[in-house]
Image (cartoon, rainbow, N blue to C red; front, side):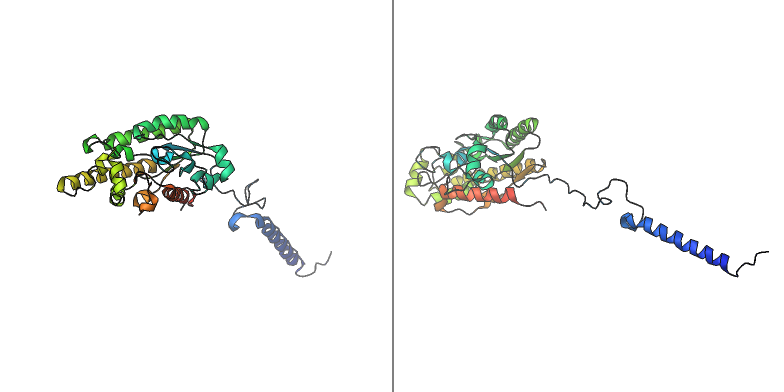
Length: 303
């Protein structure tokens, strides 16, 4: 009968247990977070980081279209009673302005891939039609500045009702979204018209030009300080603030829209930023300030 070495069976079993445990430990080295093995084909198993989600807002759009009114046309910035789109804050090529398009695309890129569909005298009711023309270019960014002419009427009673202003702006965005669901929108606030009055009324020439019919609801009887004139100007100012509230609210409902948060309205411009012909529209310097505000808003990182 074969003699068995004492403890040999126990030693064999112990060795087997150690080998088995080691094998299980090796198998667990690929586990995600020290738990279960990584699923087949995952980025973690292949040693690659998981891809980051694409941000909703692109701070470097490749083309720009502009819609709006005389401010975006550069009216009275270069010559009296004349459009000057070359100095437009949105799409102009002037080196003195460095427009939003130039800052985003470079000078050559802006010349090829930016378009200005704004019209002097336009009101918010005209924006859907302008947007319809703009979408034919398939811009990646549409810059909007409109609303001053809705407040600048013959009388305060002729100003665009807030509900109509909202409906027209919403229709303009729907026009864009039907054609270009992923296009981005930058919306500038309506300027502070009362500050325009307070700055421009220091110029005798400016006041004479205002008598030709520039924004009579605010600028008419520029030197009048009686109760009726004060009430009239406050009524216009309140309507501008209502318009800006609408712009911000409607834009906030669209995940690819950014408003300036009232930056244009709150900008404390002086006479240097006003046209030397009408003391109302932005000068070249004023256009450059508008371009800076727009660029800062468009390129801001998402929180």
